[in-house]
Amino acid sequence: MERDAGVKLLLLLLWATHCERAGAGGPSGYTSVIEVTNGGPWGDWAWPEMCPDGFFASGFSLKVEPPQGIPGDDTALNGIRLHCARGNAERNTHVVESQSGRWGAWSEPLWCPGGGFLVAFSLRVEAPVTPGDNTAVNNLSFRCSDSTELEGPGLAWGEFGDWSGPCPKGVCGLQTKIEGPRGLRDDTALNDVRFFCCHS
Image (tube, rainbow, N blue to C red; front, top):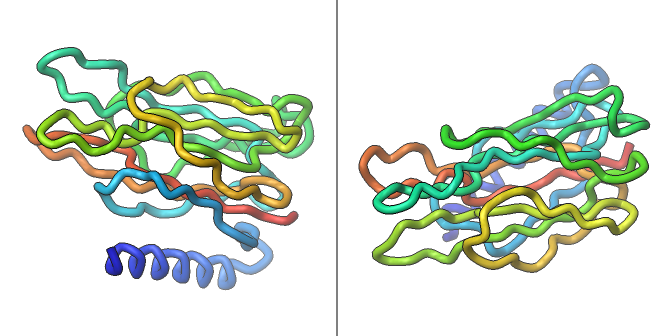
């Protein structure tokens, strides 16, 4: 557990250093990170991806593998894309995606109303089962800056956990924790995610 926390800290420090070195032409420095406590235990943290300067996430889409039946191997949620916008949510969009699993298809975007931004999130996670077919994260909900809640088109296994803390203005980037393909063994794909908050 301590090793995992150390890896998280190292990745964040490396990313902060990258942002500082990028200067005015690079991505905006984030002001805080929002996380939840119920993510799955498998996989490794991938690279962060950020919206362009001055853009915030107004919408999102999910990569979901449908139920595989018996004796299939379910992975449920495989990926998350943020749709970054400036002004009207349907215009000037830029899509960012950290690492995703290989299974499933992307959903149509869900948007905050009135050009609002994503500010907090909650994960639906299936607790580990032994023996059994583990899926880890099944779905994701976001809260918008006007308090609207958007639930993604993921699967229904597991329970939604507590909401993250809010971003002061809006989400501007993400970083996923992914378990890579395991061959004939049980796959879970997306296990956790954290989001970055920017102020401008």
